[in-house]
Length: 337
Image (tube, rainbow, N blue to C red; front, side, top):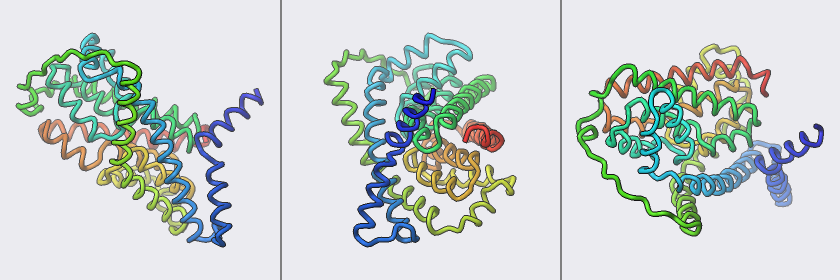
């Protein structure tokens, strides 16, 4: 058992967490005469380390997930979802959402296509919720920062929100709240040619390049904010605003995350810095969920496809679920951290 634990700790700290990279960067900066224990040096060390770590993980994860995703083009996904009914369809849709791109804006065009194809509205919303909130990338990244227990519980609760949210929307019969052009659009079933391994590798590589270019500015912003929080904002301020003494910390973090636009890669350094300064785990994770699921740009895009009533219900369901998850994590933090 001790051997298994040692191997896992090595994998989590040295492979996922890239602790070796942190040590190497610290040594190199100190060779230049920079003191990494002060604010300026610490900020530079945090920025370089997190930027390299996140971009490396991003490239590896997107390649793997895109390769898996090549087996689930939109037409095939529609056919898979069309075979299931009831809550089983919501569960399958939520699970399929875990192998789609990382940000909510990328998921909305697929949501429109599924709705146009005649799939039940609740099923498409289960997909739309799970796609940005819980994916394979978030699982691995959360493991690298918070450990496997937090990562598994985060993904499991995210899937619960997706299934419950889609099921509730289905029960409310809100099909008339989808814009006319979506409901009247007839999807064309285009046969999918069989891809060879070389084609899938090429597709995955192109996804890595395209996604990296798209998210790199947001990763820089996220790492920069994280560096400022980590080294310049007093710990007492973070604890007072987002620590255990503030019962509204989860709500504050969830609301603060909505105007931002980022994916899991952009929010990780901010979450890491907040947690290191004393913010509660539930506060940090509710912030991450809000940013990735309810960002303002994605809400603007979704408004093009659905009417205000449905958009409001979707936002209320996600916000309520995120807040509940946040408080739940606060309660179980001593058990899983």
